[in-house]
Length: 203
Image 1 (cartoon, rainbow, N blue to C red):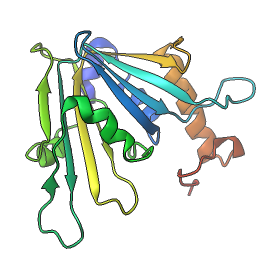
Image 2: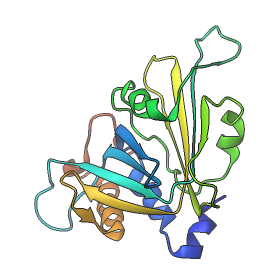
Image 3: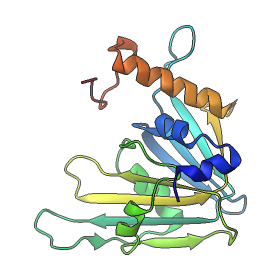
């Protein structure tokens, strides 16, 4: 599965990847009955006009979720093989929070190729089917911070995306993506508004 899948239904997967890059992962909630997974993030964004907000929190809600898989594992420097740690879907939020607000490193999260999944799909803590329909898209992200020997990989099969601000007001996905694009453009230009702890300065 890759970005070409997004062309089938108009989803701007490339834009979503930019919007998710280096976001701080605050937590996650799964509503299996509604087939939804909500990812709580603090994102990098700038408004088109005016002063940047001090509240960067958003809720990215993945709808039509059919399956969620995760691998929580630990590997110390002298371990030959990683140790897969026990985890269930209802403990995924706690596992994410245990990383203390790790960033979503990288530039590919939605409809990326299966190379990463091929590596860690043999090391699953759980693989839960919520609905057996064929999902249109996949989300994949990791949590790994500092000297912590643990690593968490998560993969979600879903159909669509809704974005809300921290008050629950829906943000059009195009607006969400545009705010991130402005932030990264400002960051690359050395704009002081686009600096955040933990995000490397422009080269």
